[in-house]
Image 1: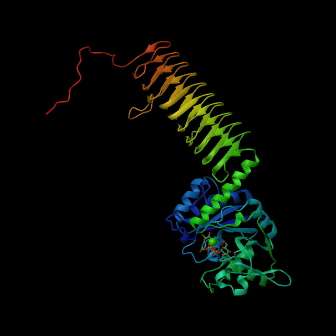
Image 2: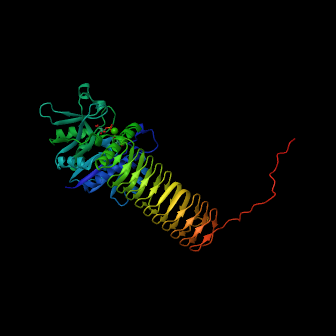
Image 3: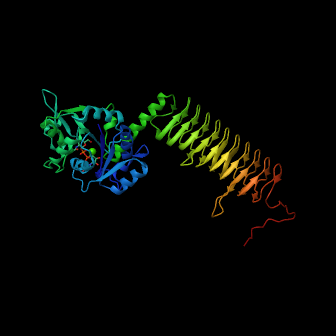
Length: 464
Ligand code: UD1
Ligand code: CA
C-alpha cells in the first residue's frame, strides 16, 4: 500500500517574533523542518508533500538546497485558513489508494519508528491518531472517548472545549495517518464554524466516527517526540532536551563529558575509546575523535577527523568546512589555535597559540608553536616554524604554494613569499623576508646587516 507524507509548514509562527519562517528556525544546527523531512524520508513513502505559505519561497529554496535531488513536492496554501484547509491543498497530488501520514513542521523530534507505528495502526482502513497524556493540556485538542467503549469519538480544540472536556489530559499531537480516499471525502465536508473560524483538520475524527471507520490511537515512546515549538523559549528548551539525549548516548558509549549540560552536537560525532571532552565544546557537521583524544574547554570543531591521543587545548577553533581537517595521532593543538579548511596534519604535529593553518599539509613532527600563519603550504617532517613567521601566499590576485622540506628550521618573524621552495635541512635566519628558493642544508638570511655606531649621542631634552 502506497504511503504519502504531508508535512504542514505554512503557518506564520507569530510567537517566534521573527522575520524568518518558524519551521526554518534551527534545532541542533538544522532547521526544524529538515529534521521532520529527514526522519520521515526513512519511511519509504512514495512522496513527501510540504505545505508552505508563510515565507513560502524561502522555505522551498532552503529545503531544495538541503535535500538536493530528493523528490519533495511543494504545495502552496494562501491564505492560511487552518490545518484542515492546509491538507486540502495537498489533495490533488495524493493518489486515492493508500495511506496519508500528516505531520507538523514545527514538531521536529518525531521518531521514524513512532510514525511507522501509526501508519501500521492505520493499516489502510482505520484513522490512526498519535496522542499523549499531558499534565498540562492547555492549548491542545482534547481526545474525546466514549465513556463505555473507550472509542475515540472526536477531537475538540481547546478554544471550543467545554469545562468538562478541558479536564481531559489526553491530547492530539498533530500527527495522524488516514486512508487517503476517505480523508479526501472528510476534508470536503469541513466547515469553519468554530471558535477560531478555521478549517480544523481535527474535525475529520468525528466524520470518521459517523462513517463507521474505526479510530485508533498510538502513543510516542518519548514525550519529546511530540513537543511543538511556538516560541523562542520552547525552541531553547527543546534544544537542551535534545542535546541532553545526545550527551547521554555518548556517555553510555564511554565518552567522559565533563558536563552533559554544557555540550552541543550539531551533526554527528564518532568516538573511540577513552575520549575526554571538557565543558562548552561545540561539534558541528561530521566529526570523529580517535581513542584517547582529549578536547579542552570551549573548543568549536566542525567537519574534522581527530586522531588517536590528540590533545586539543582550550579555545581551539577547527573548521574543515567542505575540505575537511585532519589531525594526526598524538598531535598537540592549541590553546587558541585555528585550523581552517584543508589543514592536513600528520602524526605528532604541534600547533600552538595564535597559529592559523589553512590548506596546508604538515608532515610528522612538524611544529609551529606561536603566532604564525601557514597557508597553501607543504611542510616536511620535523620542521620548526618560528614565532611570528608567515607564508605570504596571496599576491593580490592568486594564491601560491610554499614548499618546505624535511628538517627545515625557520627563525622567528620570517615572511616566505610564495611560490617558494625551502630545501631539506635549510635554515632561515630570523627576520628574513625570503622571496627566492633557499638551498638545502644552508643558512639563508635576507635582512639588513646589523651595524653599531661608535660615538653616537642620544638626543638630550631641550630645557626652556
Ligand atoms: C493543532 C491541532 C491540535 C493539536 C495541536 C498539536 C488542529 C485544528 N489542531 O493545533 O488539536 O493538539 O496541533 O500541536 O489541527 N498550519 C498550516 N496552515 C494553517 C494552519 C496551520 O500549515 O492554515 C501548520 C502550522 O504551520 C503548524 C501546524 O499546521 O506546523 C499546526 O498549526 P497550529 O496553528 O500550531 O495548530 P495548533 O493550534 O497548535
Ligand atoms: Ca502548534
